[in-house]
Length: 108
Image 1: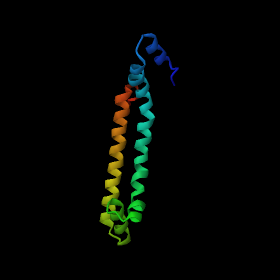
Image 2: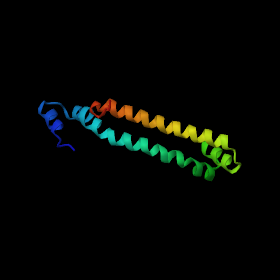
Image 3: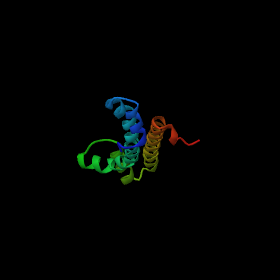
Image 4: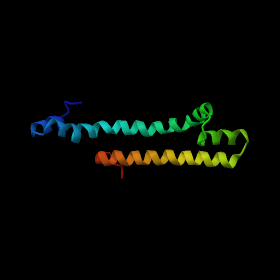
């Protein structure tokens, strides 16, 4: 929202429009984008099984599918653990970026 109080204050201070855009507007606009991108990582990982099966590409999805069909439970557990760790890591990095961009959102 370009009519927010901090943007009006920045204009009143005489900052050029490009500085207002880069320093103030972009920082606030990045927060929802980072959150959505981190949440979409789970959908991205879940789609690998279907995508790799359709296009016959080797990867984690095809490994998981073949392990499930062959009832190779240790490999299934390993792949699921790896995907869960990747998802947790991506969300932790996203949370760190959000706190870095806006320190008011940090939780003790």
